[in-house]
Image (tube, rainbow, N blue to C red; front, side, top):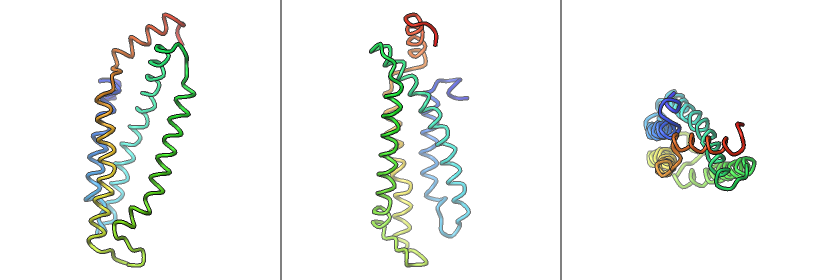
Length: 165
């Protein structure tokens, strides 16, 4: 609704802001004494993730249109393949690094109850790493020059050249 009413950029900004809040909230929601709060943490992250991926993929279509106007070629397959590859590499690196990160926190799987320092570091990194990444994404979004008005102009120019798709 926000994206339709105010534009994709504003919608993405709202989603990224909510995601930052959700990951900051993880500090309190991942509490060993109240494990049921983890359900809220997962729900908040899933909610913002759904919004992000929906608007992200829609924004890729705008970039494909912009690229077509610049180059005269329709290359959505290349953009999709590149985006997919980068996402997979990012997930692999994140999953691969998670063991080292957990080890660096002082987590010991043999202990039934973790040291308070380990819990502190786990909370810090569980919140901190995503917030840093989301803040960088937000900063990049603010530099994104393709507004709704500009995309409508691009769409009109493309349809004048090749017809309506």
